[in-house]
Image (cartoon, rainbow, N blue to C red; front, side, top):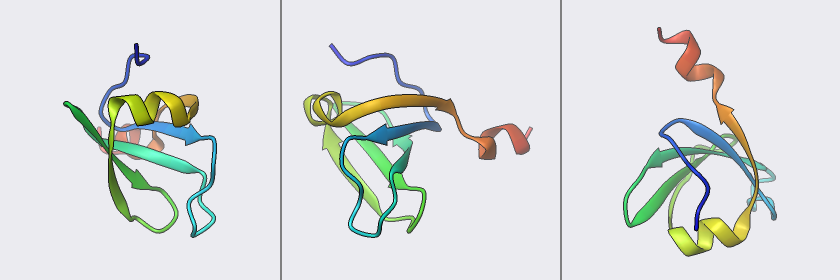
Length: 69
């Protein structure tokens, strides 16, 4: 089962994005997980199974969410 994820969590995946970025922000939760690359802002949709297999570490809430309060 996939570890607990919340919107705006920052994830580190096992392989880097082609742009060189290694961190991703969770933008959508559901049957599929929406992720946004923190380097180039490209968005992708992955199934829960793919996220579970590719996840290296959940870094918690991003600084963006803390600044908007």
